[in-house]
Image (cartoon, rainbow, N blue to C red; front, side, top):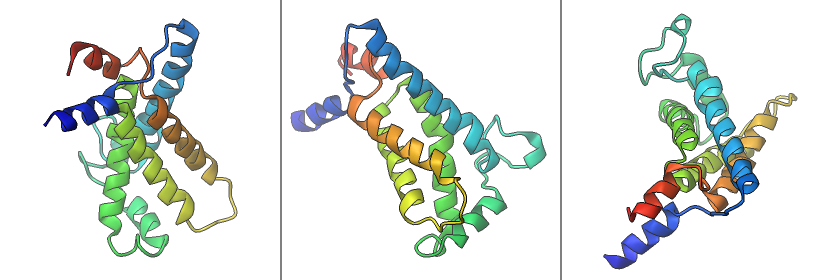
Length: 163
């Protein structure tokens, strides 16, 4: 049991520095990444409380256009397009919130990284530069897997309290 709690604490404890500038450079990209994922990209494809009413998506519902886009990408996505679309929408919406709060940052960043890696390596090239945000989130997910939330996140607060 102590091995499990040690591993969990290692995953939660973020990289810390006493420098205000260092913490600032961990805080700002984390909050911007989370805000972009949760409030810009997710509401167009996944039903959240902040999804515009014009999209007519109920809570946790996936947009049919997004499901069709996922199915268009081919194997393995065309086998279960609703499952893949729902998991991507859920990760973007609620993973973005977790990143903003700095809560379970490394695990959330792992799922951001994994989702974006699937988007990079399995996506059909359409000749546009729509891949740039996906690659940016891929790199940011990798960055936050290594550093965590920093001192200005709930992970640091929980790690100091012994959780």
